[in-house]
Image (cartoon, rainbow, N blue to C red; front, side, top):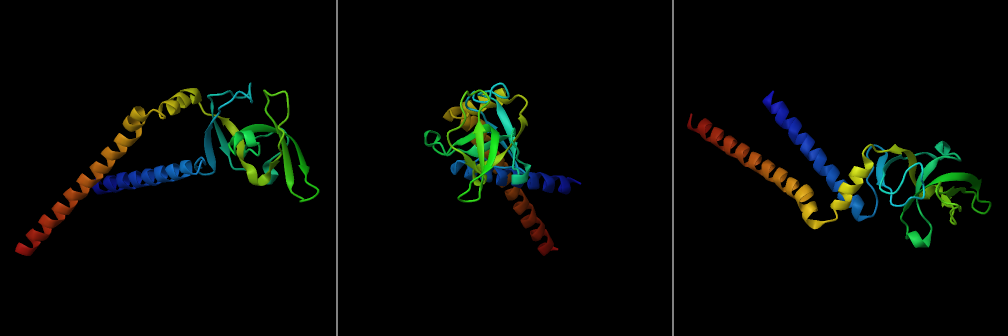
Length: 189
């Protein structure tokens, strides 16, 4: 039973470490990591009030083209040069077909905006469809803001990772020592 718990703990540690690596690589490429098709995003502006406001954390899910309809809220890579390719989350107010390319085009607008978005959205630019707000999202958003401070980041992220890795190395050294002692006893006998 003890070995099973140890192996389960090691498996969980490895899985979490691999996911953190995936998270870091995704962040390096300015993409949010997906977890079974779901992503968590932090809202920066109030363009979608009253549905959600700046500081809220929302959940989006990857969606097929046939799952999208006028009235849905989508997150997409914006074609607006002022946003420099950042994610934008607005409501689809119309869907049309581009006559020159035959591609589906989405027209979007923020609920809190009086104007529609100047740039249309193609299917390839859509990251996902809005599912809901994360409970305690504003608290999480404040926590994420604090992570930008180096001291806080070190204490919350780097230090626990170093402690976990140190623990694994100590366990590994102990296991190697036990195996060596057992081998020595077996050779003496």
